Length: 264
Image (tube, rainbow, N blue to C red):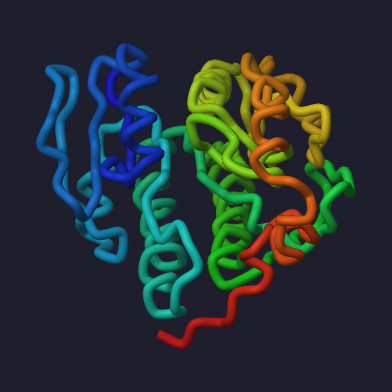
């Protein structure tokens, strides 16, 4: 790959992407509203607000693939989510359509299915049950990806990311944890497979208590290398069951299911 675009490059996932995708493309084009200044030799930075159609079109131009982490990543008011996660995703797909249909890794979220009970195992055909405005915006993004796949042939991996952090931090994350290494191992598989289509993929490393079934995307050839079981004893000792709030332990989306709808 000659040029790979990483949106949201100044954020946590963007930082992981820069580390794990170094060398995957001749150039990593980084974009965000926040400047990235510590550029490596193979990196360039182009500022772009996802809500600005012309800016998004320019940042997508000439790219062979896109890892889309940009946007609002937590529960916020509708105005913020609308600009970045609704209009911004539309702008991204329109730019991709105009500039050669680069393959896209779309960072969806477990919050698109957050109201499924913990312990219920679901697969790619499970209907969305978003747990807030943020989760609903990810459902919108997933469906926009389907539209652009069916209508224009833009291929997308709709990755419902669990908890992409260096290690699990609580009991819920023992089921949702996605190591950075596994996140970008998955991304590489999605770019490498001859025909991607527009699949839903659950982004989680191995866990004996996994809630998510990826059997329908076995064709990607992705096998997680890391396991939440490595940390189970440590996490369970630090968080005895009686100390875990009900909001965190009832639904797959955890505490997001209890957040109010923010008005602004």
